[in-house]
Length: 310
Length: 310
Image (tube, each protein chain N blue to C red):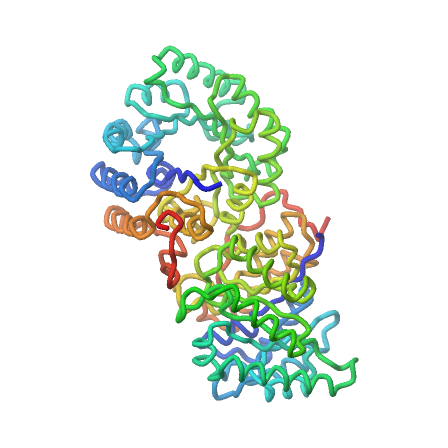
């Protein structure tokens, strides 16, 4: 294994969790700077009603801008068919629909049962299949609360597998596993990845969305790597923090993730000093928000040579 | 693999790094509370001149107290033969002599070359062999800066292996590897553990002393676990912080380490809620010092069952 895809989710997952509303110009600067540092996939926003998430109200404009950047996959989140229609109209390259394995969480979060969410999934698939193949976005079903839920507690592995199969049957191109609550541990990551892949096939599960709520984020990445996972979501500066743990980042921090992978000899294609410099844009654009990350504080080791630079 | 030994180093490594001087009574309360939570090895202090580390001037009294606690291995650090004599007089069960693989660091830290440190090692071995076996402490050579040095940069694996062999030839019972500078990455941990074990034998290397300077501490633990390492040093609340990274713990945090292992089904024998409660003693005894850790802030997952409680 030599190449790992880092999918930056800060402009969506980070910004939706903060009070500050980042200006369109700052979003553009952030996304352009990360793309210039070598990041090849960025989740730039979410097509949800502006009333619910005013921070992401300009997602269509952000997508339009991000599409102009070379070699960048422009990803967005959508909660339903209506969101997917907007994503298609804006020209997103990739669409993720989150489906919470905890039905309690699903009802609370999007007010829909599993059956209703699978109906949305089929609607989105029909929409995408009506498009010419060259303008058809990739469609991922994101299994959230896959490692446990703050409302339901333990989430059975069998339920995750069942919904992964249902999403693939409904026509998703792939599924992803999200540790929404920061409950995952490395053993569980290995076991769940194996179980889901056994059900839907190796190529239908390539990505993990991990949080660092209890400090296990990068240990969980290690477990994923050892199972052959090649795509990891992360957020620059851990923007957004974690609602369950003041002082902790929610998403794993892109800077620390890239440092770990590059130090291990795994190429991310990302220039670490350039990536670290992107933090300045966030600091200026949303000065009241905390930024996280160990590597940015500690600096790179003396004599460090990144795999991508070797 | 089912049992993992956590060696708490906070009373030594944590306290030597803070400005505050903890009272003897507080140290006793801390050590007793951790032992009561199930911690079976604690590095309680260091036999260095009180002028250099006034925080640890009462190590002999701390050892005397800790020896009265049931099922506790009382460990100390010594910089030289004189320290070892004091450790033996106090009745320590385990002695660690640090040897920095970076000779530049060794000269700066203890003003001794590798050859001089190996001479100290032989002197300590002679002292220990003069004791009756039942009162002879275990003697570990701790290879510090084994994963890189802030002064020398990259530390060659061959140098670590050479010094591990030299320590074992000098008569140490075992060696340990320390990521003093927080430079280690999981791949390096695996490779270095393999290389050292290939040279000195599997049983001569059972422990790792890892830092979390760049956030990789628990990922490095994972790598160690997969190589069969069974002893990990850590510090409650990450006390002492990291001189190279303000805001980061130096040592990996005992609470997060125990949570990860127990969540993975690996028994530490430690009661996690009791361990978390020990933080209160630190908070009261050294109120100006920062405490670290993700799990203490986030709390245990809903429905969590520790392996040691199952």
